[in-house]
Image (tube, rainbow, N blue to C red; front, top):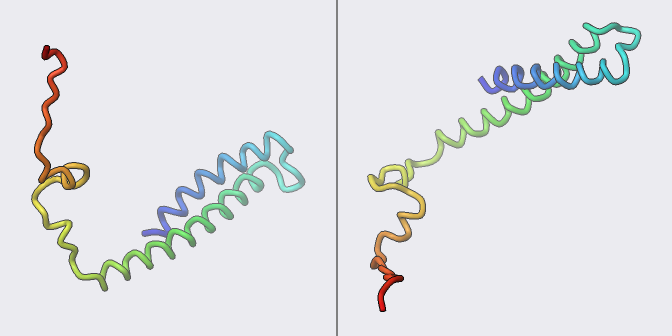
Length: 96
């Protein structure tokens, strides 16, 4: 799945970069389609390889770790978690 996501993303990025290369420097001796296609394959293969490694590392780490108690809490996470025990302070600006 990581290779597929990286390959599609890299193919789209390679299309943009290859298109700009052809517009800026010309197609070269291979032609328009071969230049853009080569860039798409290179970028798609590279990003697919990197994303597949990241997916494998993430999948292995998820199997070996015990379930975290943070995800079993019923209250919202974030700033409210740290302010749950504080007394609310009411400031009356218009008091004289």
